[in-house]
Length: 455
Ligand SMILES: *[C@@H]1O[C@H](CO)[C@@H](O)[C@H](O)[C@H]1NC(C)=O
Ligand SMILES: *[C@@H]1O[C@H](CO)[C@@H](O)[C@H](O)[C@H]1NC(C)=O
Ligand SMILES: *[C@@H]1O[C@H](CO)[C@@H](O)[C@H](O)[C@H]1NC(C)=O
Ligand SMILES: *[C@@H]1O[C@H](CO)[C@@H](O)[C@H](O)[C@H]1NC(C)=O
Image 1: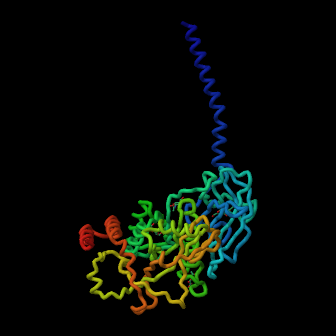
Image 2 (image 1 turned 135 degrees about the vertical axis):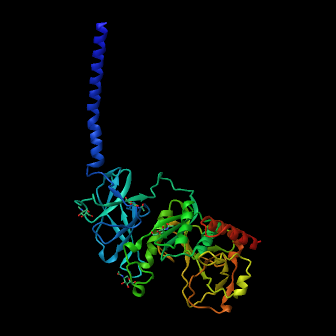
């Protein structure tokens, strides 16, 4: 009896001893782990930017985004920025590799040639990842190669990292439309809904919109579209940082940066789409890149790409469809098409007159590009690319530009009737009704009436 008790006590003491040993063994490891996360200055990133415009510490510049890009020999990363052109200094790239700081490498700062004289311009900063950097995740720029306190620095997440080395053959989207900078409380809801649905009918899978500000009803519409992930909203609070110009030429319009930063957003959009979209369309929201011989963009591009292999940029001619349709108001009232009277904005189905092209005026084109061919872009032309450019004939494709303001009223004989948009109306009208009802800009009675009118 006693022996059993004794044995039990011994066993109990042994158990406690083992327990204590385990705890002692473990503690330093846990302690080490904690100091690694919180204490050591060799860990990163401290803070990652969650904004699309990030001021760069100790400079007058701003960073927008960072992408893996190994198309230029000697470089691995392209950072897109907005740099003050008169204050460019030598910069160094610092990386975060598996949670540890790398050594720095010199950066190459490339200001885009299209800056139109503004003090700030779209800028690419090219970086090389140093050897011994595995699992690179973030990057930032320093003004000195070393000895800089980096605990304050904001890091950019590096995007477009290839998970395997193979060239991708399939893409999430065939077509992405990049809409640069929505600003000035723009509230043209009807035009927006019609245009976005029109893009979808033509085969567009994603519309990226850079948003500085939008009107209340338009915000509702766009929130609904971004919930279904057709539209991707990128916040673009450029007015918080710069006196962005509403014009395109510094000598004429003044300000810090060309047209609300349009060129920066278009370049960012191309890199954002690089790994996920076969083609990118660079046009404004009041424009529709319209195939005239095909039902959709895909069959048109299949033909064009076959006829013009190794072509990275397809230039599409722009045609203005002015505001004044010159239809008399009674004709307008008797139109068989729905009016959507209570919805803010204009009706693109009214735009059936196309202006002739004045040979004395330069008509800059819009573009369909293959993003993987492009390094730097402007609005109407690509600045640095591989492959060819091709000017698409008007009979194949043209931009329907539903201009908001008319510069000069043209006489009727200079206008051509072009009802191409009406070819899509039977599909377009129900879709527009549906989205307007979803965001409560149209009642079901109005929808019914529209449907009846449309029969
Ligand atoms: C970014 O992070 C800050 C705080 O860390 C937060 O307040 C803010 O809402 C975030 N912004 C976005 C666009 O996610
Ligand atoms: C860190 O940031 C704070 C405030 O932004 C600034 O006052 C301080 O000088 C910075 N420290 C270093 C070492 O750059
Ligand atoms: C557009 O930006 C404004 C200003 O930041 C914001 O209030 C609004 O919610 C944004 N709209 C959408 C649809 O994201
Ligand atoms: C912003 O630029 C405009 C010209 O576009 C100029 O008239 C105005 O004074 C500038 N404002 C500031 C705060 O610099």
